[in-house]
Each structure stands twice: as structure tokens, then as C-alpha cells.
Image 1 (cartoon, rainbow, N blue to C red):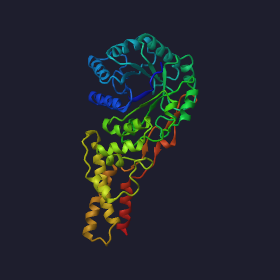
Image 2 (spheres, helix red, strand yellow):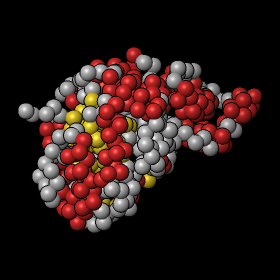
Image 3 (cartoon, helix red, strand yellow):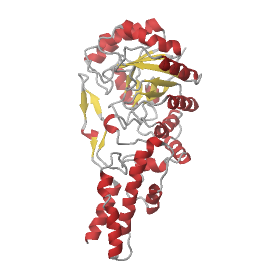
Image 4 (cartoon, rainbow, N blue to C red):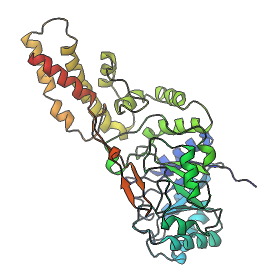
Length: 407
């Protein structure tokens, strides 16, 4: 019997994990979107990674049970990052209570560990867990990005049971474009198996924390889905802010218009302005290089109900105030009086405070992302595009206004 394609969300980011209520809401979203999988694998869950060999607490097992019972159409998978040298018995004993609580699959997360020497051990543990627990086993290999082979991947996949999924993030760790050709090339170096794609969209962890990624899903071609065994999207720590991209991804999976689905969602949930205010010039939802005064005024008056978005909202409102002051100079139809100049310059003196904001808005750079592949040894190779120079729209306007005022 053919198994359904794996589609859903992997909570696999670094940072504060989602609350239990958010995870329940995520499963509701997955169910309503026609997807079928939620993976519990947040890096900072203590008994997922740092304290991987400690038993799950009673509260955690109760939470697994409630998550598993939330929807009959959504399977919950439990992720674990075993330490180097972990025995099969340690891993099996750790995971069995989560399976008894209702989890339907296991994800062995060997990513971001300096263990390219451990392929045979990873395969051995995966086989032992599969045989002992009797649920699907998926591996996030230590070599998880790129389309190259490596001694690690060859050793891992040679003799690996064909029903064990091997996950992959695409050509790079975070990638703007993934094609079916990329997936087919990855399959060639993993024993012919189609990759289970861990798509790092819209994640914003680690050095990406200043940024919000709220745009529509783009850069995934129409035939990619058929070249993969499934897709799992890695969201942001900001739960509600992740949903616009996930709505878009769900539409793409259904072969619907991903941008139209995104647009309808952000308009219905009052998220368009903050999404546009945190976009970059290469993003599909960039507001343009010269937004109107009305747009800036709307951002200045922006309110949202989601507390997780407030740091970006406050930064955006501060920037909008500066932009409006600058536009008074740029669009003036008469020579400004000294009183008017003083008032504008007083507002523009807030420019330094805006530039010092941790949260990036209006295309403020540098935009930093791990655009990194893995080479033929399985080692990471960062690309220059990991650091993207970018001027904030606010900076452009303030500089233009100051130039005119200096006359």
C-alpha cells in the first residue's frame, strides 16, 4: 500500500520553543490545510538535544498525548538528537514512552553535529529503532545540505533500509530556490531515495533573529513536490507570523496560486503592513522602492494583536515617523521656513536611534542568512550571499532629505 506523502511542519528552530497552545494551534492549521505531519524537534527543548538521554517528563508525555489526539489526520513525530556514541538501547528506551503516548514516527536528528565520522553508527541506531519500536524512522543526516556526495552520505545510505527517510534542506541550508533537478541530484547520492525536504522557510533563528520572514512561498518549481518523498517546513519562533508563509506553502502543495493565498491571508489577519515593512528588495512582498505617504502613515499607525511581533512593529513605527518627516522635505512645494526646518530636523535626529534598533525593517541591512552548502567531504561551505548589503528605505529618504536641507 502506497504511503501518503509527508507534508507538514517541523518545529526545528533554535530559540524559544513554541508553547503547547501554539503547537495545538499548529496541528489545527495542518489539519485544515490538508497536511498530515507535525514534528516536535525544537533545538532548545532540553530533552530533545542538550539533555537528550534524560527521560521525558510526565508533563512532556502528557503533552505528546494531547498533541497526538488533536487530529485524526495529523501524525505527531518526535525528534531526538542523540549524542555521539549513543547506544541503541539508550535511544530506544528514551523514545518508547513518547511512542506509547501517541507519537507515530521518530526523527533522528544528527544535524549540526561534528560527527561526519559516525555514519555507520547513525545507520545502526536507525535500524535498531525501526526494528524495536515499529514506527517510521526518518534521519536528519549530518550531511544534510547540497547535492554532493560525501564519504559520510555514502556510508550512511549504503545498506540503509529503503523505508527510512533521509532529510535534506536543499542546495543550501537556507535557500531561495529549490528545483526538481536539485532533488533528483540529491537522490543520486543517497542511494536513489527521494529526499524528505526540511525546508528552512520561513525560519529566522540564530543570526537571522533580527529579521522576520513573512512573505509568500516562492522559488519552488511546480514539479519539485513529485521529486521528494515529502516536505516539512521549519517555521519561525514567532508562531502567528509564520502562518502567512505556511498558508502560501499549503496552496502551492494543492497546485493553487501561492501568492494569492498569501495575499488573502495577510489582508484577513491585518498582517500585510508588517509583512511589507519587514521585507527585502528581492522578496515578492517588497512594498516598492518608493512607497506612498499614505503607506508610511498607515505603518506609523500600525497596531497588531500578537505580542511576538511588537519589537518589529515598534521599529517600523519609528522608521515610518522618520520617513514621513523626510518626505515633508522631499515633496515640499514651497521653501521651508526656519520653523518648519527646525521641526523636521528635530524629528530626523531620531535617525540614530532607529538605526540602532535590533529588529530590521524596510530592508535594513546587513541581511544575514546561512547560505551554506556542504562539500564533497560533508563540510560546510558558506557563500558570500550569506551577507547581503541593503539600505533601509528610511535611510534612503533621510539622506535625501538632509541633502536637500543642506542645499
